[in-house]
Amino acid sequence: MQKPFAITLDPGSSLANRTGSWRTSRPVYINRLPPCNAQCPAGEDIQGWLYHAESGEYEAAWRHLTRDNPFPATMGRVCYHTCEGVCNRGKLDDSVGINSVERFLGDEAIKRGWKFEAPAAESGKHILIVGAGPSGMSAAYHLRRLGHRVTVKEAGPVLGGMMRFGIPKYRLPRDVLESEMQRIVDMGVKVELNTRVDRIDETMREGGFDAAFLAVGAHIAKRTFIPAKDSSRILDAVQVLRSMDAGDQPLLGRRVAVYGGGNTAIDVARTAKRLGATEAVIVYRRTRDKMPAHDFEVEEALEEGVMVKWLSTIKQADAGALTIEKMRLDEKGMPQPTGEYETLQADSLILALGQDVDLSLLEGVPGLELKNGVVQVDPQTMMTGHPGLFAGGDMVPADRNVTVAVGHGKKAARHIDAWLRDAKLEPAVKPPLATFENLNPWYYSDAPKTMRPQLDAARRTSSFDEVQGGLIEANALYEARRCLSCGNCFECDNCYGVCPDNAVIKLGPGKRFEFNYDYCKGCGVCVSECPCGAIEMRPEEV
Image (cartoon, rainbow, N blue to C red; front, side, top):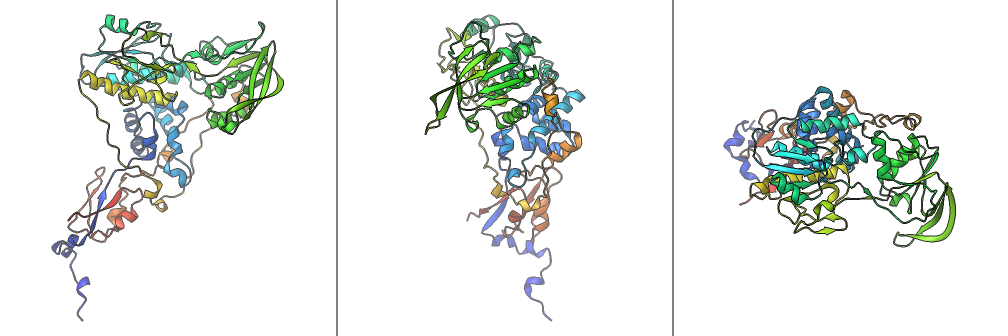
């Protein structure tokens, strides 16, 4: 019996017959941009360090992470992890606990004493950094890695800036912050504490600095006019939080009112409860959905017994009492007075209405543009209008949080380095975003997110012990392995296994694959079966 020609070919005959010439389109391996990476204000390669972590290579993961961010233990506690909000896994079950794995790696580094490597060579350039907060110390780290000599001048007595003076100990233990700061100093960064810079131009000239990065934090509390009698006790939130870090606990009384709706208002109200206040009430002009504070922090505060008076504003402060006017929202969502008043008993009032930056050190510097209390900079380079003078963090127009500040420090450092070399860094071309539609989610098994432990409410309000716990190694490993590796090959071998033409060539561990286009007929099975969307079909060019 004569068999049909199609099934009598030997396996090697596909190459002999050049079946790849039948294609109208070809598969191509690609690298898409994971949404977590795209979202991170610090510019971390989140997917990259998770890849090492899921293999149990924790030091490699930590070193990969700290290429971009030198504070993983700190960020694992205070970052608002917007990366998790865009994680594709969230559309499958729950987003990957990126922040919890980051904290685990940071804590592991402190426990095991991992250090940063010294630069391979010295550049001979000397850069001044003003401010030892997240942005300033991030810039110091990256500049030192590039071989530059760095001097940090800090007006306060300790390192940390607003991470220390604006974030309570129950969120960020001071030994964690100090460990990560000291690791940068140990690279050879010179720090001068209790050193205020009054005139940046004079300081640069006298010190012979080649460039400067300004990273002064927003330490000045904003005020508002509230008619008050002499016996009323009015404080500002920054003052309260700063005095707590100095070990000088303020006397707030048993009933404390906090005026404001941001994260600082939440922090200081929770601090008041820990200082023994029986009542801590936040007075806010709008509704909860309009509150700038992050919802999870509001929820934690409510669990601890903090109360909130929504749609309320303070009209007058008397001894032991506040006059509150009820508000309403108009059609534009703006609060409007109603003329209805009530009395709120309060021993002290804490104002948490935002903070400003002291810009007096910039007086007399030509070329600078100041607007709305901040310095205008080129958003691509972070350089001000004065050559060689860069700025970031609270000093520039941007969201004020630690992650953004760390990202500013890294970006500024790279552009300072380029400016010193008379070069210009061109923006990197970003690959297309890896969306959920690019994935084949049926390949991934259900794996619920690991929840970090928390202190119970009773213990939280009676001490300044850390509220949020960390993951143990087994949980961190599990959580890292929940990553879908969106848009980037993780060598699952699916394409190799399903290809009907044996056209996929394995290049070895860590080297991924390539196609033998003499075999490939362009059927597209590899694309439809790739779990992470790392292959796409492209038309053949004739």
